[in-house]
Image (cartoon, rainbow, N blue to C red):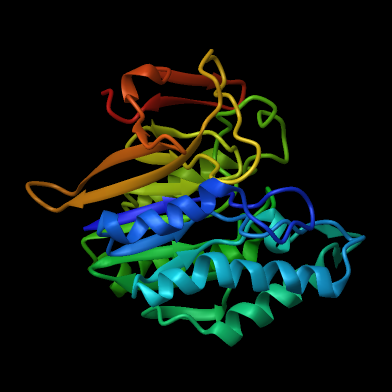
Length: 300
């Protein structure tokens, strides 16, 4: 099975245009032969209260025209997680700070009503689950650093469910990563709180990988048995990896899933616009921060 992962597609606040690499990637994807496309969040450039309702809606209209509709015409299923710029779940004084952004995002996605084989869509598009080609996907709302108790209870119920446990593989997708991997993303608020406990939860239910964006730097890592795919940015602002002198670059990643003799994944990642394959051995063997250590996924 082949999955294409794209993430962090947006440009500057309020932009209704995308950088050339985004259009390049969308045109390329059908030729890669994917069974599925996953977006790691930040599909538009919101999260600014000064933007008008019309500006936010115009960004979703542009996303629909440039990204979603071409994939739909190519008959490639599309799943996604909400990024902080799409509809942040930040709360201040007990109220959603970006309630307007979330309402417009919810209206857009429920109007589109993507043809995903949902297991639970009661809170769609913020968190939901579906079963596609014998892979159970759980999308949680990691648009902020904190998953609330209601969502965590739902996560455990979904991962323990029969559709999840009878699937060949389980993948979890969210915008913020468990642990930081990029320069200036290694401070609280830029990755999930209580990452160790979240990792234990995913391991308990035999999740193969957690796929995230937000750090704008590609790093296929591992913490214990759990793989952590940090998708790089396809849009503006790629970042440098912690502890690396490699210049930042934009990426698109292919995940090939193999079932035999055991379930395993292989990542092939392209730099854009030149479409050269990233040599994994050029990436740091490990990424160390005060919040956690990741080992490169190909190393024991």
